[in-house]
Image (cartoon, rainbow, N blue to C red; front, side):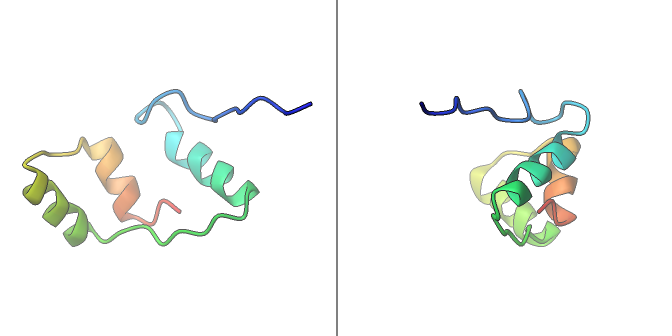
Length: 64
């Protein structure tokens, strides 16, 4: 019987979302490098949007 998929967070920005997401990835041996703040800001500019700080800075501070 297949195990039901469970994701550790319900929404980005909830308390401890970054740590829960990181643990979820590490438990599955998924490596990621995060992204530089400059690269995130370039993406925001090209998409004409601005990410909320609670999403932007964990990504820029090597979430993974």
